[in-house]
Length: 113
Length: 112
Image (cartoon, rainbow over all chains, first blue to last red):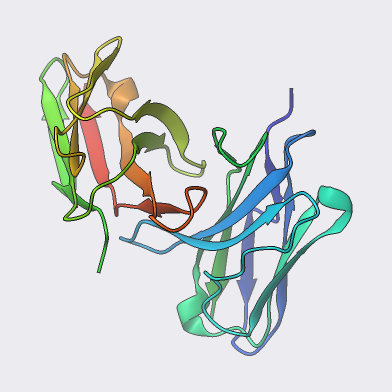
């Protein structure tokens, strides 16, 4: 079956612009995660969605970052007024439920000029 | 500061050699996971270790969880070019076990 897909695969933007990153989780997976991977760093947890529960936004680095998950499926991560330090690979993962294996998408490489 | 420290940061070896990468923490983890990530892809889970002292084998890969559950190692026997990749360890934070803390990874290159 299809895995987690993310779009776009690459995004180059100018400082100050807003960007939207999309994640399509595996069908039937109720949990969805966003991570950020900067060069030389491990994955940094950003946000977690589980079913209809309130998302855990504790990892979002600033109020310029937001995410939503519509209909319990597709998720969008939005970064407003991008800064150069936002440049990184943004990874999405989904799992059947909270305690199950997380399956990762290929990521979106964001470059802020 | 990384909760999980991985060493070495880079490792380049010849095909057929053995290698070991390490994952250490000052914190106790209820479990640790190992992932491999190839360029342009997301990490893929290799194994989860949950019991102190546990040893798990996956073909030529051997994973060990320290007795105190603060460290883990990955040993690859007779490495092959297909083993090339970024190896990441991760463990749940104490507050929420869905929120994983990742090490920075070890980049392994196996030369043919």
